[in-house]
Image (cartoon, rainbow, N blue to C red; front, side, top):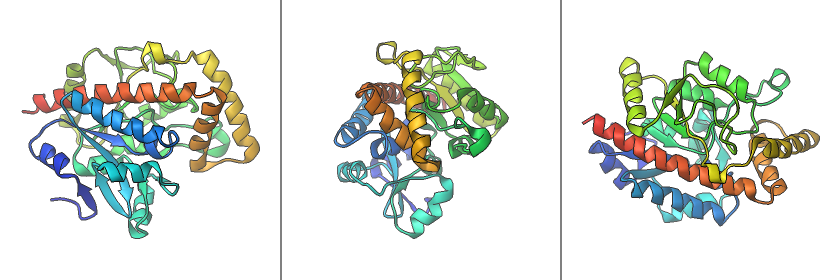
Length: 301
């Protein structure tokens, strides 16, 4: 039975009913990840690459309090140009729904029954957590929602060792796609080992099927490194991140405002190189997500 607050686009609803491959896409990358009009161009490119791989894209958002699964052209434009789009977590959904406001969160994909979610990089444990206690709700959401998240690791602005430790504590499987080390978003490697590796979408689909046979609670993180041609060496981007973090502290930026501020500041410091890398890794994740979703839907037949 469809949730009363959920609006699923007809194409997505039909694909889900037929057990076909569907990949959820977040709208946060459109609203907060990059400026207009590049963000809407990227949004369309993400949907296009998923279709080319034989899957159906379902960009998710909260618009005027409705939980949207699959956006049309006008809705994509609205998200891309909306200054009031909230960077939401699950706790914000009641406020967004009741206030008929805009926002985005991964939980919507789970509510619609979509098993694969492609994003850029997940949130995690922030640097300086010992004084701020700042840990992204992305991690607890991964522990609760039966969704596989395809990402280029966690955002490089985070404390990556502690993020991996928290994922272990929450019993979230972390699977490296053709890699043995945790990707560092802009860079292919962080030097941190991850416990499992898979070398094909079919192998990942088999792991996911086993995961959800054991329990339908909780997801998995598929760590997919940025393509080598597009990565920014860790030492180079590390220096820019350090400057951005210092600027954030000087301005008193805190809470949900930290990540958007840092990403924008790093974009400026790298003269757009970080944004180009962000687009490349998002497209790479969407392509892998579609291949996994297709393999998963085929194995479920």
